[in-house]
Length: 479
Image (cartoon, rainbow, N blue to C red; front, top):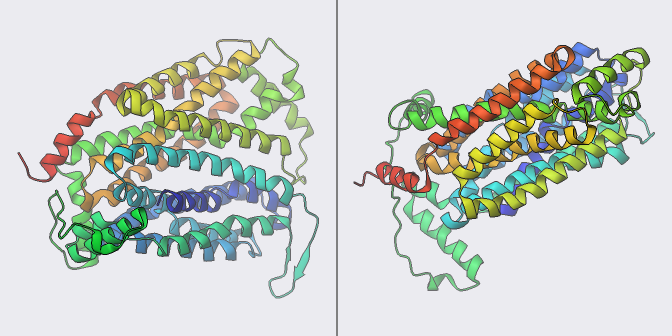
């Protein structure tokens, strides 16, 4: 199940974040302006944000596996069609469609994985999915390096386009979604979800099948005759709008309101502070190692960034649509390093606990962000910057709380909504960071570093594992 859910995450990353490579690579053929390229790059995230709520509702009412398979299928079809777009508008429309379809893929895969995993292993596996997410992001850069420089071009008269390297890369990035749709269709539905919708016999059949796979024994040896859900069940509501409202309102009413606000706030603060730096990572790294500033050892990171921007303004070639290979290698390297650190994080959580790890990592990372520009020693600034980026690993920790802190009947909706809040704040952060880097670079690190520290302090309010157990007892109606 972990392998299937990891493949879903890879397929989602490849399709949604493919614009980072496809937009600049297609600029010459599609004749896009800087404004149009900005729209093309922002469209996928817009699609993800707009549909997260819908996919969460459908997963809670129609099933995790079924909806997830539909998501991946639509994502593959729309993403593949986008590779044959004759202009930037049609490209944006199909990328919006594919990303909107995959808007719930991450949250639903996390929900499915958590509900099919033993409680003792659940947090570690969910945290490891962040490793998959980070490595998949880096793998895209590695794939792009040999594909984009290819010189072939085949004219398709009916569409009046030339099929070339960036279109091939678009198809490559879409392909995993098709494999994921098939893989998800071949897995079992969440037995916990089946019991929550009063399909006890089907849940028992699923559990028996899981037992046969895990043990290699006959299903007749499975010694469970009935199953119950140790939570309150909701009443069925007729009508799609009433039903959607019935799934959403519990999250905005006591006793779930406090949990929704806390997790939503932590997602928003974490995403707005860290996600923008990953988006602008190639630029920041370029400014750090570029010849224009790389030979100066007495400049801070922001001073090097300003020198890099001043230099590139005089040498920029508007007609150049090639990608910087070294920048892509750096992106791959950084994501690989973060993936490795995340693997150690799961062990650290087992030893110190999720709450302590989250608070400690946020505060240490935030302090490092504040120190990035306090030193003119180049490699010391680089170390502070990498430590600051380590807070991205807390995205996985927050997801484990989302799947643990909410009851089954609203879990998929809750995970989708909290992620939607985080991604929405990331859009704001991306635009703010771009403006600040160009005008007040030092202020950017002070603001985003400060937000990271504040989120760590607010993390004190996160329930401990003992408190989570008590909350689950309250959800089940037990004293």
